[in-house]
Image 1 (cartoon, rainbow, N blue to C red):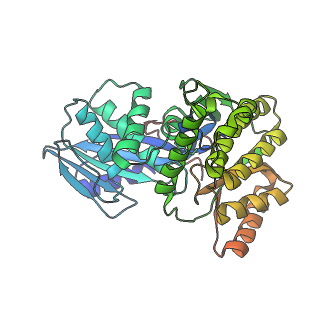
Image 2: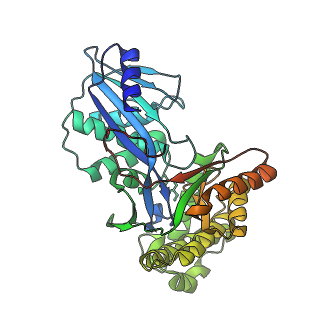
Image 3: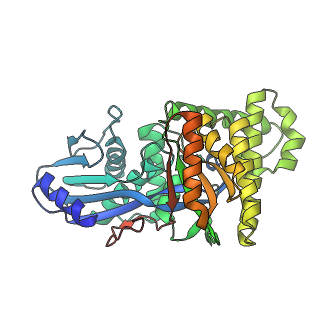
Length: 391
Ligand code: GLA
């Protein structure tokens, strides 16, 4: 893998790459749509990710090329960039823009990206490309940012340059991920613990619905606004900064402040989901995978009925899982509106599961999902001597 990317770089730019970096994607085990409400989340980095190779140039330009997309960009080193169309290169361009605005003297670079995260699948391909770019620039130009600075900076690019009002979970997970650990992250304080994701004889399956996520960004921003509206109503009587500052019991005492049914549903999901994460952390600590699995199903149900970010494709996967005795729990992961579901599947039944969920999904939806058995990997870094752990 590494060799072929280096060869491709030389072919494209007529000179060798001098550095290479890798940032993973992520799955979120539980705690969905609550990072931007100051909640607790439980993501982990996966072994799919984004590779970045680079080399300086003397031409005073940034050149962006990708193995995954045909469109390319060459742009003078000057800053004050704005998002241009929907091209993939807007993500690294936004990061470069941020570095320049912060006063760093960047010089010309030839950049080559390659990723194996299915795009738009809810596995954070965007956070992955942002963070790998930020990490690379920081290393290459010695800018002195901490890893947490890089996370915050990448989130700011997503919010202000790309225009999606996402929380901090994805950038945090792909930067701080650790092999075989889930991160218990408090999105208000940014305190986190890396906890052993001891799955015993279960594996984490990722089921990509292969449904393109149309309108995902505008729907996402709509949910963020709905939560802000709920918070404002509760703040009439409660001294809170985030929806997740209260638990379900307190919420039940004050939810009469919210008369709009939709806003009430959104807030109910957020506050109950935060409580579920606390229970899930306990279950994981006690090796109670059955309990963890039940919380996953409850999370999905709430995302489907109250938060309305699932869809028939994700529901088909989770509905199948509920009928399979070899599955402890399943839910959609990430923003939703298509993308991926995850499931805890008995290791020795994985092949059987994969065939059956595929058959069920095809019958219901009309085309096949992609099913992977996922490994929990490390966060961003210099590209390792890469042995493909998935092959
Ligand atoms: C997307 C966002 C995250 C988070 C999830 C939903 O992945 O980027 O910040 O809000 O959706 O949990």
